[in-house]
Image (cartoon, rainbow, N blue to C red; front, top):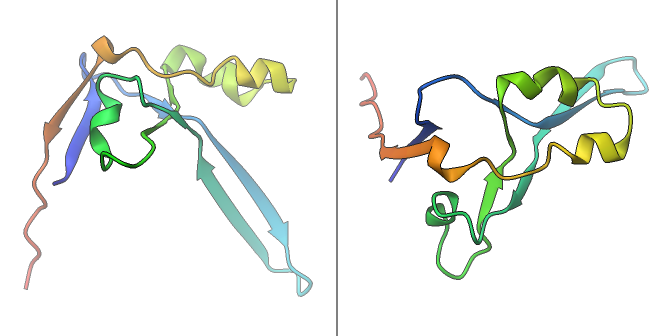
Length: 103
C-alpha cells in the first residue's frame, strides 16, 4: 500500500537532508543526497509504516519557518536542534493508490 503523508493543514514542509559534491579524478562531479531520519517507534503516525519487527523511522520534517535556520546552521549543536519528530497532531496519512501506467 502506498500512503500520502502530509501536514493536516495542507501546507508545504521540507525534509532535512545533507548533500555533497565530489569531484572524480577526471574532473566529473558527482552529487549525493540523503534525507535524515529519526527513530519513530513512539510516534503515533509514523510508526505505522514499517513491518512489526522493523525499527520505525521517520524523515526529519522541517516547518517552513525552520528552513533558513537548518540551511545556515553554524555548528553541529545548532543543526541537531532541528532533529526532532514532527508533531503527530499536525500530520495526517491516507491511502494513495498508484496511478495506472499508460500502455
